[in-house]
Image 1 (cartoon, rainbow, N blue to C red):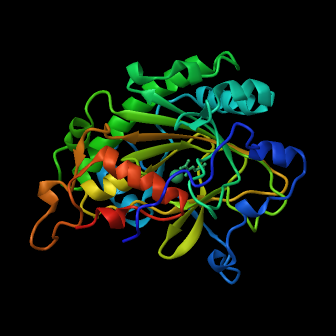
Image 2: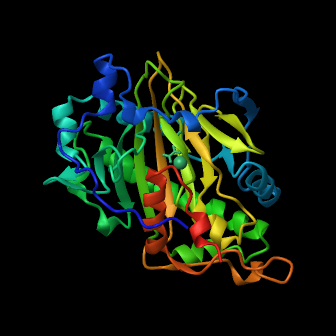
Length: 352
Ligand code: OGA
Ligand code: NI
């Protein structure tokens, strides 16, 4: 196991340039963004394209479809999710409109306050170590649930519909995720309320508006480096026109293509742990293009920080010994984020 990382090797500052500013100035990615040669795979075959499995929610085969998709991809799409296409377009439009605002306006919501990095707000990843490879992306990251823990001062008031649209999307996402988690539990032969009751009514949801500007050297950088999510389950609304998300399946990168108004669901490490490894949290990444920028909105749904998680008792037996320890969610997430920044996984740390 790795030694714990020392924090704040480099100090963050409000002066740090956004990726969007570099792209708009026609700057090539600086060395901090360039993936190390040892980690590039120049001979790797180009990513394949294969249709992302569709789950028909509410249909008799939903649990089987979820099981098949999660065991092969760790991901699926739902088309008949009940959210109107016009609503999803509006959400994408507010995301684009936010990133189009002048820098000065966006900086009002900066994730750096008084020289201190905070998890929420507009900006980039924290820089915690020399040699950390940065991603070619800017983001707005907000806790949207539990509602009473929202930091409204970081919720943009421009575009003026952003707050309302995000609030409505939160309510809709919560309901949809609960609907998805029931057949997911059943597919593991657990009580259908297993995940929903473990989460509780006001579980954690973080919203992340991702903006991936054009990049003059897309082969040398990642929009988002290969990672798994620390969530229980994540809902992604991808860009309507520009692909970019790829998932590792059977040792190969596959381009994730979804129907224009589909929502993509991928499970995160908390599901891998609770399912005792029956479902694996998929490794995924985002690539960029020279001539196309991209937005996406990810909703990370997770157990509350003070909760304990571990493999469901029903999924631990002689045939399938316990793979993960019981952990406090916030302890796991602390390790998760440190490792995420280094391009490493955290589930091995959770193993027994
Ligand atoms: C993420 C993520 C995918 C995308 O934000 O963790 O994987 O398509 N996003 O932007
Ligand atoms: Ni992700």
